[in-house]
Length: 308
Image (cartoon, rainbow, N blue to C red; front, side, top):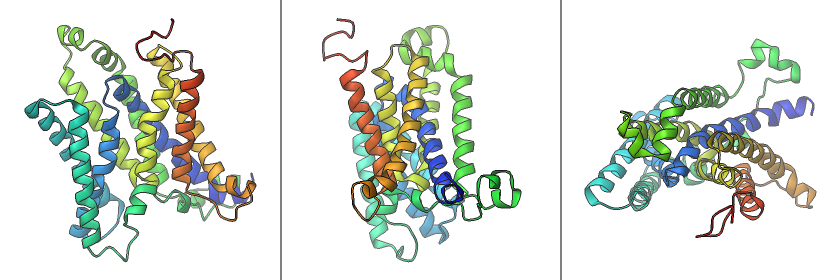
């Protein structure tokens, strides 16, 4: 792993790892609250927000794109809660209605608007542009200590580092309220915890992770990392803290192994071209979940306890 690795692979791998960690952390609580599809919903509904932001500003700069995606995510959260409460239907159905409708609207806007001159299309929305986030100024591992070279890092890397650190800090600070309201909402209300505010805060945190990761890695990784690592970790342990650590390990393993296999796997098998890194990372996370279903110590058939 010499200068070529640092220049072409280090930044995409780090961005993939940070995006996976940022999504897996809130994903643990969403899985336990049976709201796993909220990540799927948010990663889809940011598309119309991004398209509207481009149509209004005429640029694909990061700030207006993030603002548009963030506004769309908040609108989706409000719509899901309104449909769930006013319609009296289960959360999964409300999420399905909202994210399919808004994503379809985003696709229609994308097709009817003049976006042919920019990298704003359905494929980019799904797959991201992870392979293109290379570090051109790097000349080797010594560039990690060179301020001039560090100034040439892809902006997605420090952005994802800040978001991952922020979500890690929020999880640590609100660990006890999150844990109590997730496992026993009635007891949490009885001791005075603002359960509704905690739930909204968790969804907003998930939205921040999804929006930040969306531009770099696309919706496929976002959806996979919200669900696969936490679900696989849930099959490994009954302890919440251990589950979180397992999920982080699975997320990091998926990002690194998926990126390496996307770049070198086809060559090892005799094919000429590499494959999508986002697709391979999501596939590896799905394989890990499948293995956990087969050998995880806390797996169980439906209706049968894990210890039986």
